[in-house]
Image 1 (cartoon, rainbow, N blue to C red):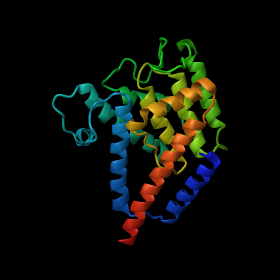
Image 2: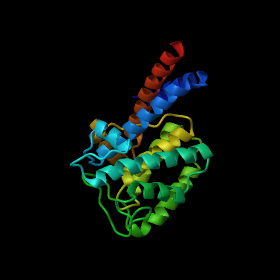
Image 3: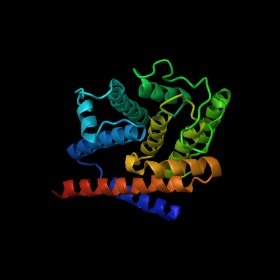
Image 4: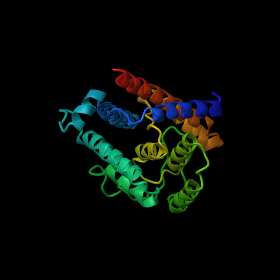
Length: 251
């Protein structure tokens, strides 16, 4: 796919959505609830959580699923809290900082691994199945500072590219012992929402292509497959959102 062409199409869809504002309140609320559910389900499922979409919905409603590990329940509850926090940062228009990244990660791992929640790793790690090897733990603070410096100077990039690169480079550093994937997707969507776009939900069914695109960026420095993946999912999300909003307005 021609990425600039894809970006232009996404920008047109966003302009179309913006032209419909103010959006119908009830429709937006139900779309947001579905978005949070799907984002939580797919992001956790990518990491091995076995709760189904319906089970995830039930856990978000405060009900415990018999026979499922407590950790999987906390992964659902924590992810919803992390989304709430990310949305609050977007709403307040605060600049992204390392402290906020650590806070997001703390929410992701709360009650699961409290010792490492919000703390940069103090040991070396490997990414299972990936060719890329993250930097030595001693270099993590330096690498994160460099990432934040790049991010502060990335304003001229298209939001799709900036969000995709933020995800790729963060997960390449792998600054935490666990929870890097969920945190990276939260960061990517923070950037998209901050710039007025919809969050991108990477379906668990596309996990292999997602991992391959990440590894291509990490080992070859070629971000285009990952940017193409993110942009394509954003286009699909905008088209779906527009279809429902326009249907609601026409009703």
